[in-house]
Length: 276
Image: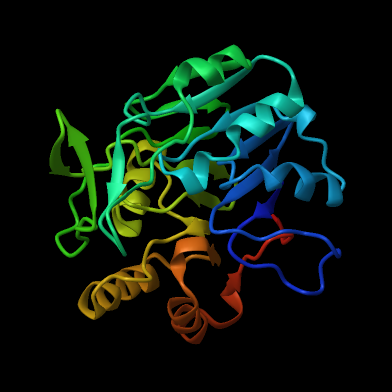
């Protein structure tokens, strides 16, 4: 099994010349006979990155969208145009909500395409609200319960309903769990539900307590120092074998994770291949 970071915010200079970085995230998960594209980045540069890494996205089995923000869904149209075939896309039914942020100014940050446009290019949306096993031992979280008291919602995010601003509950935030012989591999988009909430949810639905790997965006860059301290203490208790954070984790948080977990931590830049 391996996970390839097709695009995120940075590129390690040791990787092939010509790889692009952007504020966004897309990962290819190769597990048994499946190739799952998890998120699509912001602009479609993921297609050329994949080709430079020797990967033809026409071979993917399915697409999973972690949530409805542009930096995770903006590459979807170019991917569909490239693969030129119908494909299942697993997502929460509220992924097309009108997502906004107030930082640094009020702006729309939702999916930049109409659902009908994507369907005309071959997108077959499979709506997921509850935990679902999409392939043997591969689970989508569905909506994640928000039970951890110290994990707070991002108060800069809101949706518009009848032109009224409402705090965004981010119900569409989903993660992917793979149950292996060595424990769980947890794949995060932005972890808007809270990293600890997601881990506990993964343990509950898979009945597996061991945490083998945590890969993706943790959304810890702008949380309070108190929330980060509590998150770190809980992560230590889970004793993961490997943490490969990127995207919305932030460099300062990544440094603190490295100080805490040492060789168990890796900053997963564009082009990285994580093998299990």
